[in-house]
Picture 1 (spheres, helix red, strand yellow):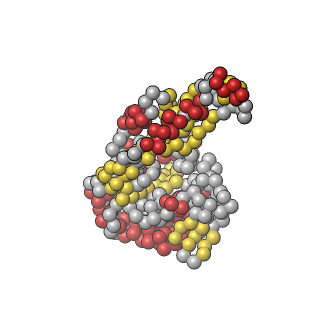
Picture 2: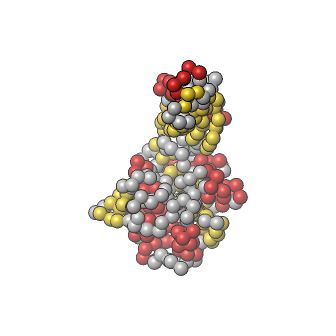
Picture 3: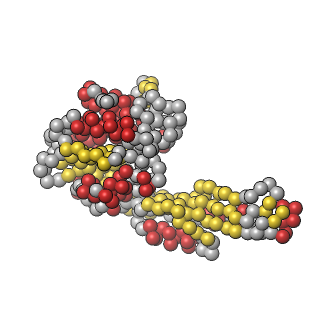
Length: 355
C-alpha cells in the first residue's frame, strides 16, 4: 500500500506536495484516505477510527480540555494542475490552497505532536466540495456525533494565515415564472415566461445587501442571480422560466429568518428553497477562541463564505477558520499556496498546542 515516509510527514511543505499529488476529486477519496490512515496508525500516541472515507484520530491523555482540528481530503475537479510544482516560494496545484495545505498541517501535527498541552482530536473527511448531504463531516455529525465533541475546534480552511471567525449561511432558491406557449410569429397569443422573470431581476438590481458587525467582525450579505433557464425552441414563446438565486446571509440570521427574507424580497412570486445551510456566529468571547486569536497575534475577521465551522457550532463547539491557503485562489486553475505561509502556520499551531 502507498505510504508517506517519516521525512515527508515531518515536513509540512513536502507533506502538502505529497497530498496534492494524490488525486482526490470529491467522491474519489479512498486512495488518499488509505494513505492518511496509514500515517495516523503509525503514530503510537493516537487512537484511530475510520468510517467510510472519514478518519478520526485522538489523543487520550486526560488533559481536561480537548481541541479539534479538521480538514477535508477532497478537491474540485483537476484542471491539468496535478502533480504539484514548486517555483521559488510558491507551490502550484489543485488543492494547494483549498485545502490540502491546511489538511497537511493537521496530519503533520497529528503524527509529530505526541505531548500536547490539550487532548487533541483530528478529523479528516470527504465530499466537502459537493452537495451537503454527501459531506463526510455532515454525515458523522449525525451518525457519530461523539467524534466532534471538543471544547474548541479549528477548521484549516484557507484564510491566508489570518483567523476568520464564524461563517455566513447560504441558501439557494428557484424563482419560477410561467406563461403560455405560442408561435413566435403570433406572440400576442401567448405569454412570455422569460419576460415575466424581469420583475425578479429588477428586484435583485434594486436590492441593497445588509452589512452587520458581530464581535467586531463585519459580515456582508449578498443576494444574487446565479443561473437562469427558459425557452423551448427558436420559434416558440416560452411558458416557463426558472431563475436560481443564492443568498449569503450573516450568522445572526437563522435559516428560517433567511427564508422569510427571501420570500419578502420576492413577494408574490413562486419561490422554492432548494438548498440551505446555517451560518456560525464568531464566538470570539469563548476563552479558547480568544486565547487562539491572541496566540496568532492579529484580530479575527469575518469569514465571508460558508465552511464546516457551522457543523461544529451546531454541535455546541466554538470553532474558527485558520489555514495557509488564499481563499481567493480556491478552485482556480492556477491555484497555489505560498510556502512560507505553510511553515508559519505549522509553527503557530505547534506553539499554541505544544507544551
